[in-house]
Length: 25
Image 1 (cartoon, rainbow, N blue to C red):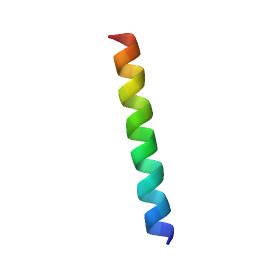
Image 2: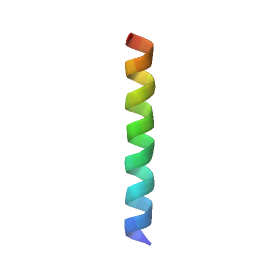
Image 3: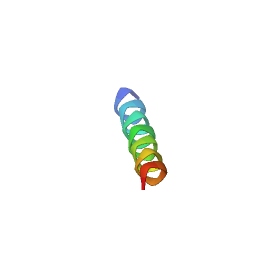
C-alpha cells in the first residue's frame, strides 16, 4: 500500500514538473 502511494506521489511530481517546464517553454 505504501509503495502504491509513493508511486502515485512520484507520478504527481513528474506531472507537476512537466507542466512547470511547459509553462516556462
